[in-house]
Image 1 (cartoon, chains in turn purple, orange):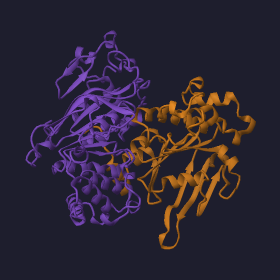
Image 2 (image 1 turned 180 degrees about the horizontal axis):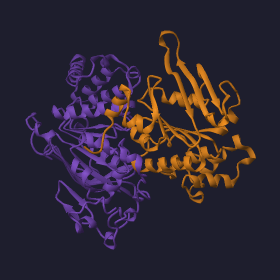
Image 3 (image 1 turned 30 degrees about the horizontal axis):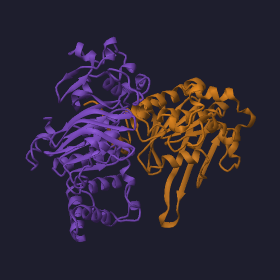
Image 4 (image 1 turned 135 degrees about the vertical axis):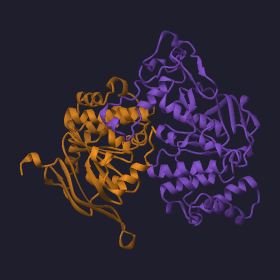
Length: 343
Length: 256
């Protein structure tokens, strides 16, 4: 947790200790358990990246964390602690209305299309502030937006603009500003960069880092399948597979020395403009993620894993501590051997 | 000029303007491009650079405001016979989730090719096309789109294009909505087709990593113009234009 990026934030007026601690999260679509006993934590001023293939439960986890789960998704259990306040999610209990947007905020997938085509950005901001803070004068809400835009070096002209007058990248940044207008302690960003080209991606990543640096949001959970983007934005990464976290750790360590075969496989299918990409054939991961209504026994990755052994059909051990671990039998047997050479 | 020198598909000084007067947007502005058999040509550029408009011009889905389109050296710019043209030039688009009629099985979807192929569309031809993209016909033919994964859908879309046995395939952001692992699989399908059947492929993307992996030649577009073009190694590892350098600098790297 102690990377150089977070070191200077401790003084930014946020309370010490983790922004988010979650444990035992379980959520299901009918009989399909898409998030199965997930625990994670986000430190103050930290960006936690969550990665995995399509259909591994990333977006479901984002919905649970952002308290936006609605049918057919149901939350079966788990506990969230945000900024010291505990919330029990078991037994279908509803989260308090005030938490959404104020304590935990969601930056959804395809957020650039989330703006009403017939409302100016400023009007949306007024609605957002009034929905949470009651009868706030229009001018006060607009001032709040203007100050925030200034602080983040975005042009004030967007306040009076309709969405179609803004570029896709600017719309995405405006939605980001609107979703963090109420200073949520935790921002859940679900694939915010997937539809953007590299230049606007870069601008959004810079904006998110700026938000945590200034303490405007306490911490961010950034969900994506794009590992190079996580390398740029996240302090720590958690890799999800079939509804569970299989490995977590500091970003640089995970990228340079993955400890779970699934992480290594994901990393090796990344296409970056580096000379070695042109020279070899990149295979992708063979097979497909399992049907979550009937997941494989033991390590859920073992049917696709080239290192699978007989023991892998039993529950894999957790190798490492709560901050950096991998759940893998092979890693337990070969603690110091780099994984990539064996694949 | 011998026939060997004639490119399969060529656009000469293609232009397309939307709107008029002071609102006119030159989406594609004097772009010349050649596609050769057995070669993957990639167009990269940021959103709004005119990549997709260029694809639509080359597909004859949109008439150009200027320039010529040559297939085998023949001028096809104004020809109304798009049926014949589309037997040679096929496309795969970005979104494998909205490109399907959700009430059609894969079999029925592929059978729509009868409108172009008539009696030539045989069961065997359908099976061959599906096998070319690594799908087992028995597995997918009876399925509905919601029963297929994103990668499978996109492969069905490529199979649909291949049914025509086209000589040119235009893939407009065909892999953008897939995750990294599936993306590599689809790109391999495309590069294998190129080497096995000598297909000419135009690959359009904003992802330089993908361009780097699949292409033989790269064109960089900005504001409707081609600012740099050449062999992949030159353009990506030794870019000469300022815009290409900036685009490369924004690409997130995995190491270092």
